[in-house]
Amino acid sequence: MKSFFVEGYGCSLNLSETEQVAGFLKENNFEQIKDFKKADFVIINTCSVKQVTEQRMLSRICFLLEHKKSLSKLIVMGCLASAQNETIQKISKEIIVLGTSLALLCRVLGVKEKEFSPEIIPVKSHELISIISISTGCLGNCAYCSSRLARKNLHSYSVESIKFAFKKALESGSKEIWITSQDLGCYGFDINSSLPELLKELLKNKGNFRIRLGMMNPNHFLKIRKELMQLFSDERLYQFLHLPVQSGSDKVLKAMNRKYSVKDFVSCIEYARKIVPQISISTDIIVGFPGESEQDFKKSLDLVKKIRFDVVNVSRFGKRKGTLAEKMPNQLNELEKKERSRHLAEFFDKIALEKNKELVGREVLCLVSEKATNGFNGRTNEYKPVFLKKGFGYLVKAKLVLARAHFFEGEFLCLVE
Image (cartoon, rainbow, N blue to C red; front, side, top):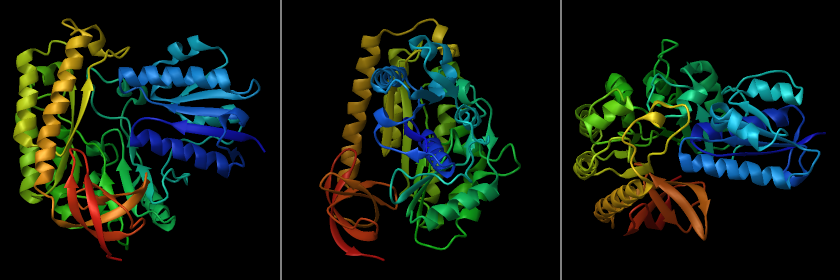
């Protein structure tokens, strides 16, 4: 029996496909082992979303290449492999570079070809969490994005295949299910369906599970917001939205080739909070995009102050090979980008801590789904993280006793189920 070692990095879509690789190979009589040095096949599923991530991936590839046994094959998959094929092959001719296709891996391993699908039973990374990818690719063409180069156009999986995966996830004991893709908001646009239609089907399942929705771009959220927000009346859908704004400046958004204005984005948040006042809002902001002035950056700060997000993921712009932004004029120096990134992160942390302190003392429901050092991590109905000493695998009542900028410490009160 041939053995394999697989590891994956990046977004939840990438992690889902890594789990599918493991599940598919085990189904085809390969043995998964934890020591890559002893594996016949070493597979790394890469990410290329940020410049710093790319460097990390290349360093990891070099490490694996240096330490794997001479007879094993090193296979590189994922977005970096697709977008930067030549860069990886320059490291060594021994590396097999496959991109984002499972069928290509099948050819290398000599098994019947199959593409990624929700119908592949994955090997879960977390005991109580399942990740289901519902589509790949997107409908955008953002100037900075290398993932668009890697995954191309939107391809939505069928509702039936996702329903199958969801049922299997519940049968496997999962309490929390992440619905993910490159852009959830445009799911189904290519197959005459939509995210709200899909969720209505998934919520027909019985049980006290929780669904977490992944990222969706604001321009697509605008199209589905009415139907989508109505579904949050079901407590099994975490009251959480991830809508990346990327900049508080319309000038920068236009240069980024984003398909909405700041006004559009604000209307998304206002509508969501009108329907679900306590909903958690997560966003992404890129600082130091080519041509971003001090005034543009200040507009991003002003937007963070106005919206009072629950989560802000701050990224420094990095040139991605093959993207429109790579050769744009007025590139900012690294020192300036680093300073803006630090400023925004600290600015948000103050707001987040202030906002979280307002919740201390409240009793909340938490689904405790992850193990942590000296305890467990739970999530409130608004997907706020709470550290607890016990309750793993259960829905519990807890008291928020201490607020941090990015999480709470909680006191376990009792089991709810």
